[in-house]
Image (cartoon, rainbow, N blue to C red; front, side, top):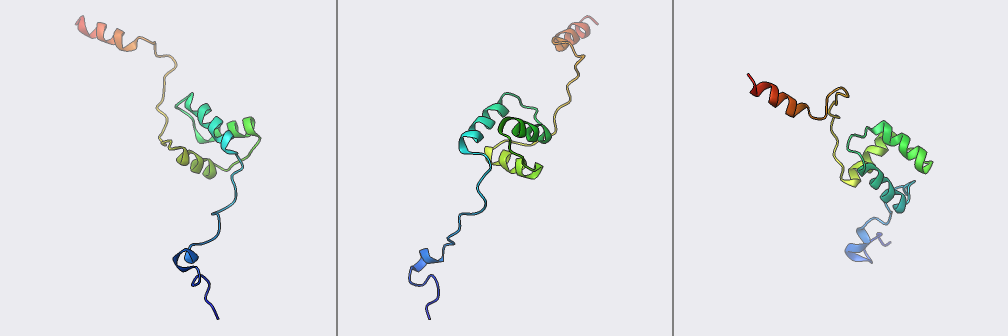
Length: 101
């Protein structure tokens, strides 16, 4: 009786499986997705899920999207709230107002 792997030495001990189901998105589609995501820096996971569904007709769970973004090297953070009423030159106006006192 021969125990599997002995005849191949150390290389025979390495598992022969590829590591899971193939991705639903092709490598080309992943590059395209990464470029789309770089256009903005305030995406939320649900928006990305909808984007993938709309652009590539592929549905992923939020956890799968989290994994894709991690592979892209993207960081996760809470979006910084932006007040739409804030004028573009708010800092300059504040400096002028406080310097006159």
